[in-house]
Amino acid sequence: MSGKVNPFTIAQQQLDVAAEKLGLDPATHELLRWPMQEIKVVLPVKMDDGTTRIFHAFRVQYNTARGPAKGGVRWHPDETLDTVRALAAWMTWKTSVVDIPLGGGKGGIVCNPKELSETEKERLARAYVRAIGRALGVTKDVPAPDVYTTPQIMAWMMDEYETMVGEKHPGVITGKPLPLGGSQGRIDATARGGIYVTREAAKVFGINLQGGTMAVQGFGNAGQHAALLGEEILGLKLVAASDSKGAVYNPSGIKAKALVDHKLKHDTLKGFPEAEEIPREALLELDVTVLFPCALENAITKENAPRVRCRILCELANGPTTPEADEILYDKGVVVLPDFLANAGGVTVSYFEQVQNAYNFYWELRDVHQRLDDKMTNAFRGVYEMSRREKVNMRQAAYLVAVARVAEACKLRGWV
Ligand code: NAD
Image 1 (cartoon, rainbow, N blue to C red):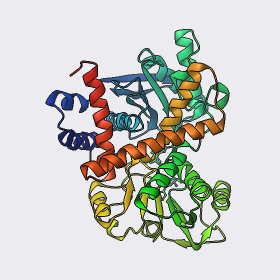
Image 2 (cartoon, rainbow, N blue to C red):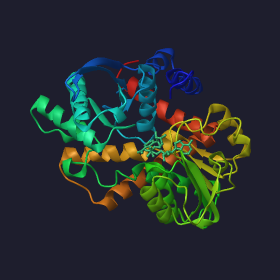
Image 3 (spheres, protein in one colour):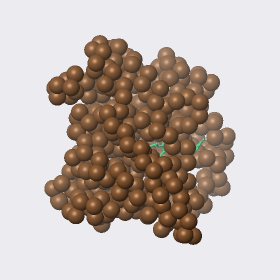
Image 4 (cartoon, protein in one colour):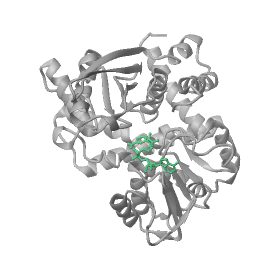
């Protein structure tokens, strides 16, 4: 997200296009271009060696017309206020497109967690919540894990918040460990949501998945579960996977579980016995039924898009396709399932976690899966119908659905 292009400028431009198409009045358009509340704090934290380090941190509550702000907290050395603003805007559209009663938010601490001990991480997590805690709450703003933040960090944050308010409020944060009120099914929720929308897309676009092939770029949390569930639920055959160190390929098929085991054991895909090594970039150009980009942003650009040959591109990563590449893929007839629809399974199960915390009643795994399926299927259908009606691609359609809902909520509240 760092680099020359300001991600918040991109987020505003994407909104501008949707606003024009929807014919939003100028006040609503302007309201949706900006975060409604931003908090910037400076955190002095004691290090293990007795020195004190100063950390800069943010929390952005972008829009809360549809419900409390919702979004992760990233710990990253390159974090900026504009990155957090952009991510908070995208969370607003993501919660809206899957129609859960939440707004959008995001947080960030500028730090390198790889340089911090566990005790330093705990003090940093608690300092963050002490500084911004008054703006958090189950009815105000609910953080979650994101880049380099873990269920353990969520547990410390929840504990600090509960200490501040003197009451139990597990729903103040999601992505918690199971013994502290986490939800069943959170671990593979992002990939599972993407698998459900891929299934729905295949139905309406007449693509046969059973016996088809898939390639997975980025064999981390999202990518590994996409491979396992693509095999189990969709009947796809995994033919290639990549990580930051390289890619492996076998046109006759790779058992997803065997490759996951190999990756977990060796921390690399290299050396997997039943596949040949190919250049990482070649994976994106394989002739497969479904391609899952699950690594970083800007993987598919105007340079390689003309050579992309998948039928469905299911964006589990955030921002894997540049706007120019998007148009090329659309012209080629590739079905692109846009990131904030395709990877919304994670935030949807986070919402389920909050609901379970509120009722103090916990669901079976099968209930989580069924409700996630219903949410993702309905979201897909809404976006697909919009794309047909307005004759736009799936990404533009997802923006139209999401922005229209937030605009309507702002209007109903009498804000504009
Ligand atoms: P992760 O760190 O577990 O996995 C990322 C993987 O990508 C790693 O295996 C890494 O080696 C690989 N990678 C990095 N650069 C690569 C490259 N150039 N080519 C091939 N592989 C490369 O992260 P994750 O949680 O799986 O998230 C992946 C993407 O999905 C991110 O864009 C993230 O924002 C998005 N996402 C994840 C979730 C979630 O719940 N995990 C939710 C929403 C969105």
